Length: 108
Image 1 (cartoon, rainbow, N blue to C red):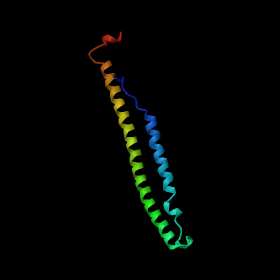
Image 2 (image 1 turned 30 degrees about the vertical axis):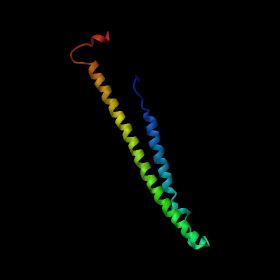
Image 3 (image 1 turned 30 degrees about the horizontal axis):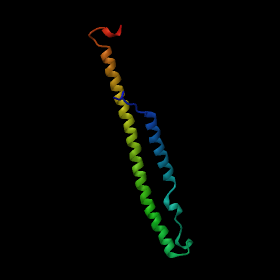
Image 4 (image 1 turned 60 degrees about the vertical axis):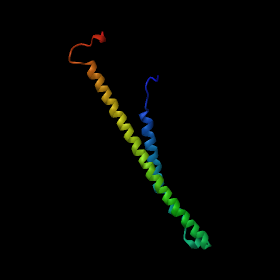
């Protein structure tokens, strides 16, 4: 039987922060930055293929960024929930040990 579990809140915070950092970096580099005028390709079909690729890639990056933001948000929510639960358990334990009915007979 396990002795309980441990959640590394700092690791969750770092994961959420890392995702946010990556999303910020992605926001500065647009897919359209690699797109060029059709004349630069010298071939209409190649130019159309690059435009189609960039459009599709942009959709994928947009979905990835949206999903990443959701993961980061949920990790931060988990940290707050664990912290709130920990505070609740600490206050509950403190209340039991400092009962108003008198001195704890097991504390001698």
